[in-house]
Length: 129
View 1 (cartoon, rainbow, N blue to C red):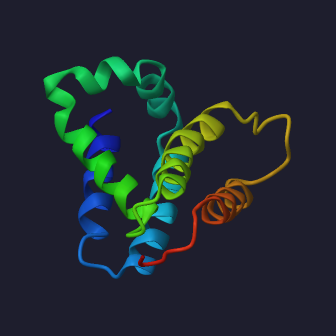
View 2: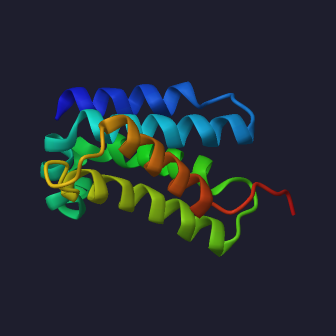
């Protein structure tokens, strides 16, 4: 899983310093791409995610995930924005690892576009209260 974790780290770093809207868009697209690229690793990681995140060796992964979640939630700090961000972070890996591409005739590009669109719609608008 090291390459997937390294890419998660790169994504976390890439979105630092971007304005809120650009960071959110980059986080959504980057996370979807990462999940599509590492389908098998995602299945392994997400099958025992709660246990993995308790392991001190995965503390950095937890911090990266929290950073990406904060970017997705945006600056509003509302419960709704936090729930939407966590829903996106939890849902994309599950969908990618469980959708049966063989029984469907959709390409990875179509799946990517659908995931990015659904994630973007799920997130509440960026607003400053």
